[in-house]
Length: 217
Image (cartoon, rainbow, N blue to C red; front, side):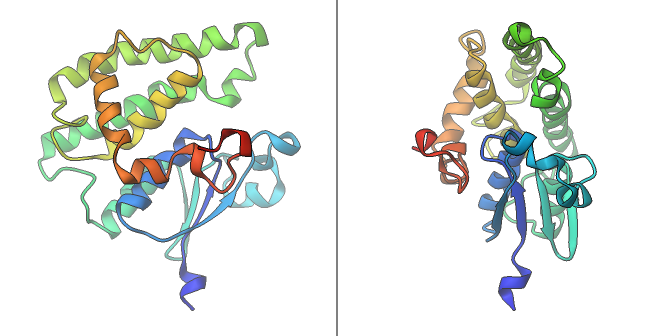
């Protein structure tokens, strides 16, 4: 019976949006099953009829939980927050909560989609790296400035919030696209502090069921 009720996360090891959700599930101690969706193989398994029925946007993550299917990582995290409120990922104070949502949206709406696989495919191959770097640099210039006024130990104050769940995967993307993060000391130091936390380690792309052998760590 419990096996049937276990949430199912449709995820790709390298997807930063999937990683956000994996961190939330880990922090809240939610046991779940992973169904890997390989975004590269077979022309992209997200385009299969079966998966399209699950998520018409043909993207990961998608989470089956409590008898419903949710896609869009921030919507998933907000649902987990409302149904399983501990530990809290949105501060009680409305102003801090607004900061968390602002930073999360900046990354999830203003940086990540511009360097996402589906967008890069539209760009000529020799320009793809520069395109991705410019998207991340432009977003990080703004983010660094914002974090200087909101950050404590983490993105907003001293508690881990939804903003941190967005930050770490985006810094990993920046590193993958060879962005120099030296000009972003606040982003870099917060990222470093978060990466030592267990929830960020166990959910890391190098430790997923679908991580290729050569990328495992």
